Length: 89
Figure 1 (cartoon, rainbow, N blue to C red):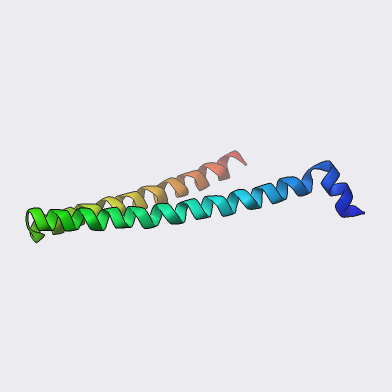
Figure 2 (cartoon, helix red, strand yellow):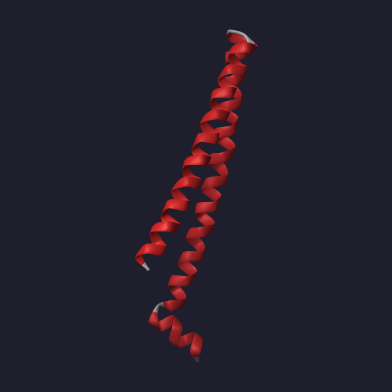
């Protein structure tokens, strides 16, 4: 009876909808990560083939440096938000 009442009130429907959205978002991210990795590998291979492997290594270094800067920025932003949440609560 409780399940029937939750279904009528919309609670159960919103829970199922949130779960389906999470699964859909995870599947979309999986495809994006796989395809972006493939594009990076193909670009580095093309640079290595057309120019030389030194340029491909330099490009790879810039990619790694960009990744490290993004990680540092997101970590800093997370700390900042946690500090602000402590002040506003």
